Length: 566
Image (cartoon, rainbow, N blue to C red; front, side, top):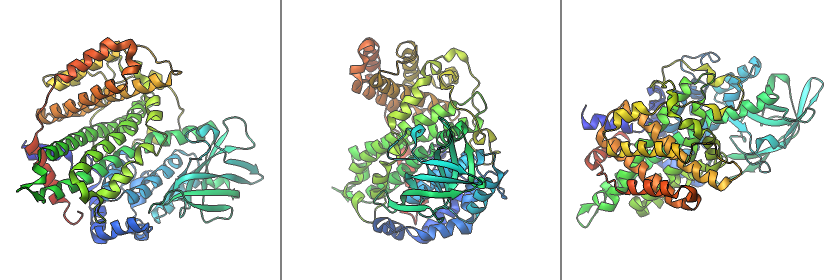
């Protein structure tokens, strides 16, 4: 395999490593080229709702073809983890607002496909086919991420239900007839919840306004004696709560794929600008500090794409008793989204003033990327969820079955992710033995050191469950745990795609992140100072030269591929 072919496979152009349907990708790119980048950027500046996008979704049937499972909808495409995540990154590459409108629709549909109510499933499938956007009404300012204490309530009156209360931060709530809404049963007991379909066009629905001063419409709405029927009930009782949380575990993973889509676009635009700008007789892309930043951002993106690709493989392979994807997805939401913002801040020093210009896509990318780590709880909410499984993650002797590398959108949709199931059991999950990855990649110094460090962490910091009452320590250990999970999963991907030059560089950056995290959390490492110092000393002794020529070749190829979009 040539260097160019290997780099293209790793970096993936404007798509994710898990390729979306090529029809979807070409349809989306062709539509954005037709609309024109100037109009897309101008609408964002003017906060103009992109009405023509609704026509595109309707005329192509993209919502139904990407979001409705084939066993419910009348089509040959349909929802799969590969198709959804691939399209997620592809849309984000083009526009954050357009991605969000589609992404929120995907969240709206997920608990409906889990439902036992065929009537409500039929409604969502038909309206998605007609181009109706979906909406997901979970958040309330008063409850934050504590959904158990949602204030919106529903009463049963004879043959109908009546809802009162309100929701905040609800994308598409201004136009949707498919608002999947979470509430308490006022006439029920503790933890008696309900998920139901609300319609912004019905009596009793009041649109308060847009919660953000942006082009996208993140609505605040109120329900006052809002009536709905049995055909609009999605699920009830503890199962409604479980369905809502399972939707987040599956669907909000795409905050990470959106983040990598934004970074992909920013990288291409940054290289396009700097490679065509000459100062002091040379291209600014070749300046030492700029070259380093471009290489670091590209290598970090390779790692993120490798990680998210394996997350999707785990989602596709999930079965009862094997919910490893929940932990992996929590790490993606916490780490990948934050790592993207760090990479963008570095690239902003490279693209410099160009990144703030009216006609630069970099400007909205830098702004909206900051939203992603904060759109569901916080980084630490996800880390505190993930770190609960740390003792079993480091129990490498279990030799749990490896998840196969599928990475295709033609696979049959896994029904398990869209079935009603209980929550819990994260502390008992079994994770893949890392031995195969260590043996396959152990000849690379940075990978060998990474696994040595992981094994040392498992025997010291994570050999027993953490005291959840010590939140500061849980947060610190959660960050370290996230890096251990991240690198181990990247190695699963890397061993199937040998490329010593690339993976040695990727893992040198993972080790660098670990060292910085240990330094930042040193006050919480008091009981493990000897271990932390030993890890820091080992990490500081490593040095890797970036594959500059290969990265430059890829970035130029990505620029050529994106003609008409930059």
